[in-house]
Amino acid sequence: MLGIVWEIWLAPLRPGAWLLSLKVVPLVFALPGIAAARVRSYQWWSMLILGYLAEGVVRAASDAGLSARLAWVETMIAVAAFTAIVLYVRRVRRDALPPG
Image (cartoon, rainbow, N blue to C red; front, top):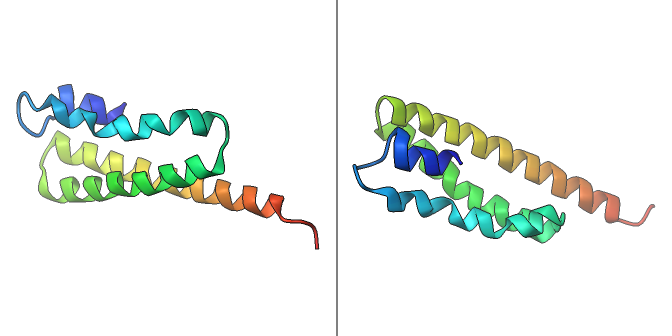
């Protein structure tokens, strides 16, 4: 939601550049797999999140004002999501190993 609201209303890169809000669409494709707790979907999503992390860092360093603050929020969300996904996948894989 942050990506859509950011690019359409809060601090678009340029006026009328609403097409940049479509950058969040790839994440939507993984939602059915996430809802079904498929590890492969979580892994796929974690790789996508790294792109949003990179965008957040670049825009936080290059933009000013509200856009820079939103970029830091995007960066923190991306780091938290990536960390949570890695920990979840690690736990699921560990639990799937046979005892011994």
